[in-house]
Image 1: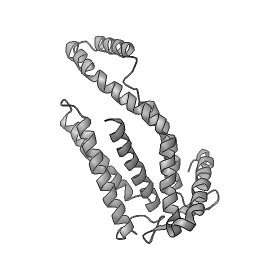
Image 2: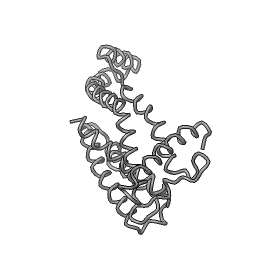
Image 3: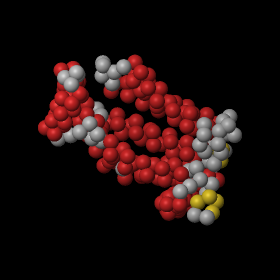
Image 4: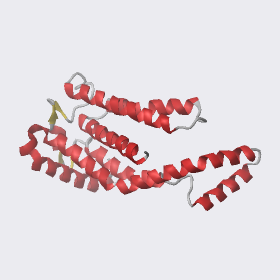
Length: 225
């Protein structure tokens, strides 16, 4: 792990582990799992302003695309003219094709810290106690295939598949009629990458992945109505 990540991961560890300790009288052996879910939700709430900015960017790009396609069809043989006309259109509308992308990039450090927290055995010079927690009898630190036959893994896989299915449907609905078959294929299959990812990460990270992808699905479904 890069040394510059030690401090934020250590801070996140003490926060999540402290929460797990606080709620243990209520949640028992599921304290670490519940703490992971609660902290993931807290991070997503913290990043909500960035998500809103990304949604506005998506809507801005969608609004410009018909006019951009018209410019490309009209001046397709003159790339420089297309570039000038598109830049003029963006200037007049007060947006750019990159609107909404920067907020997405800004979220990456938060997600990387959370992911690292749930995949690192040693944090702040001590054993990661979060990975010692259990859910349905399976330790949160176990990797597939060691827990592949347990109810915890099967439940995680089913829930990730359900979220991926609805995410895939939502992405397909967002594509317009001009989208290529390849674009539609990618939109259909990409959300199911979470299932493949779950095969290479500890159960704790899989629980984080399920929580954050579910949040994304619900958030975008509500905000893009």
